[in-house]
Amino acid sequence: QVQLVESGGGVVQPGRSLRLSCAASGFTFSSYGMHWVRQAPGKGLEWVAVIWYDGSNKYYADSVKGRFTIFRDNSKNTLSLQMNSLRAEDTAVYYCTRYNSNRFDPWGQGALVTVSS
Amino acid sequence: QSVLTQPPSVSAAPGQKVTISCSGSSSNLENNYVSWYQQLPGTAPKLLIYENNKRPSGIPDRFSGSKSGTSATLGITGLQTGDEADYYCGTWDSSLNVGVFGGGTKLTVL
Image 1 (tube, each protein chain N blue to C red):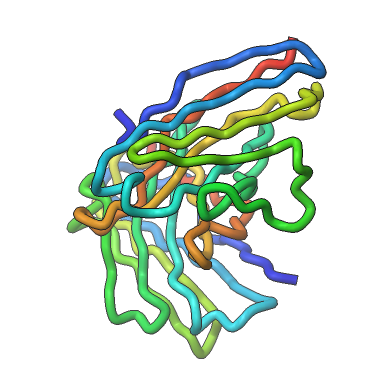
Image 2 (image 1 turned 90 degrees about the horizontal axis):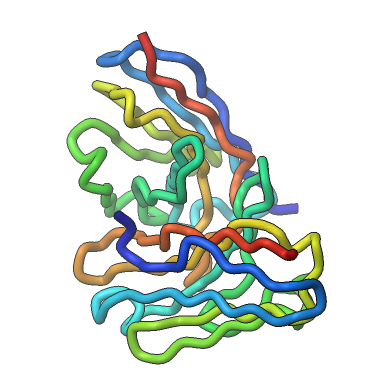
């Protein structure tokens, strides 16, 4: 079945870096655009970034632009998010999700990132 | 402040009907499909409606969607206590090249 599994979350100090990964299975990963969406504690969904199916285009939310980088390895069916210069307001559960025919589906189980000293 | 506007909360009794609105702009809702997501407490979002009014397999026909111009609506009939969740609308913003979501609506089944 189609599945997305995030990893790499944890506690990190402000200003430090962290890399999230998302392992995809059950579908042809290289055919789909992929997104990261986050959710701060008790808050709503916030779109973070997208990467085209072939990695040719990437777009970011203003809140992370210049600090986060989305990339993918189609040979390993893996999506990643490199997060630098982390801030307290980046604390959230980060979800990877596939964009398929005008919908975000499915979603991974999420990876919790806590930025705290 | 979310790009798409939803009411913070709605409520209704079991068996009743409820609607959740989602308001956007010409660069997002008006010119792109809307999708809706259900998030039960402590879980990841789940697709409910896509391309304005289509239901994925496994989603009961109690859930429906519509869109007109810069607004969209999710409807839920025959409310059940298991429908208590947060509901989000989402779409793509063609001008900004970003994904956008509503702030979420908490449904309470009284």
